[in-house]
Image (cartoon, rainbow, N blue to C red; front, side):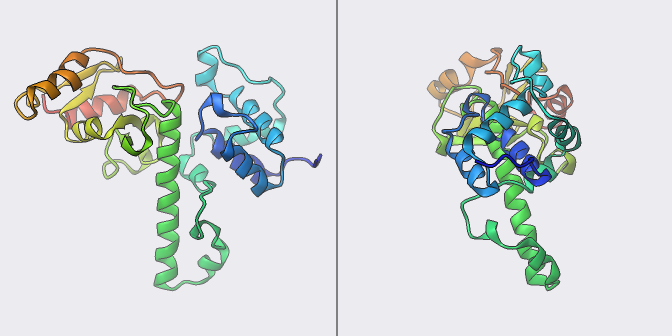
Length: 250
């Protein structure tokens, strides 16, 4: 077991993972924790403890009365202050079980050909998309916030402010909702929206566009009810207002 001081790279990778797994899964038996531990040369138990240390610095968890171990180091606090909220930077440290993930980035940068530039852009975009999806789904405990559906193949990390509208929000988990495929499509097209208190709004245009039984079960009986709240990354009032004012078809 190593007793060496944690490096900056190890801490940033662990913080990136912290953003992408539920609080209740920050333990040494989590396969993602085991994988990261093997990648950075630490034990799963050491990574799990570091994740819990980061949790103690998270104001969203503090507001819910959840605290970590309380033995964070100065390096932990420095990395948190520098990187938390810099979603694009944290997405660079997403690890994936793919050959492209292991491409030496320095080698790609040195190769200034058009092909190498495209490869690097695709790698970064995939990492960003993976970061956003995993962070949003983890915040909602991998459950649709409207229906409670847990089948991963049916779940989407939905952007509230669309991807094309504001680049600074593209990877921000506060700009995301965990929805099933049906409600994701309805949200994206403006047929449903949310109040600032996360209550479901249903567009009047939807009633005549789906079978009555589907409308009643999936939309009408849920209208006005608060969706399941995330453990963290609760959507901000500004992104919810944008969706209501610019996308919702009321």
